[in-house]
Length: 162
Image (cartoon, rainbow, N blue to C red; front, side, top):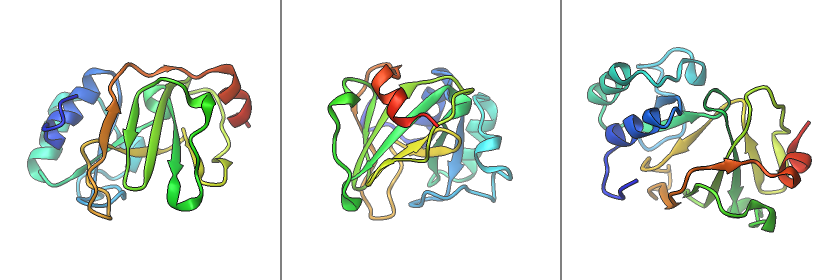
């Protein structure tokens, strides 16, 4: 993904990948309830609806519904003591406001704990803010490894499964 792309263009690219997107409030991580009523349950790949959302509010951030998109995201927050684990390996990775998001392919039927360990959340039944959203601290979410997410490896699956 190009680093200079706007949120509407990025949301449309995510939808083309098959990732269900939703609008978030500008410079926030909360759903934009003025545009979407059911939060991540209303996320979509419908290009016309995405065009509408981001035309009505061009400052909206982007959310990706993880399970709906057959993704699981490991959310490493450095401010909360999160550390990069060797098990993360090479996959689609985003630099966040104070950490990293590691994206993996994972069936929507899997169940994950919400917390892997201190400072590392697991996002599956829910959503994550996506690049190039603006974090509440002003930092722009940036893709730092723009590769197709890999299938979650057995070690991470065993560590994070319920």
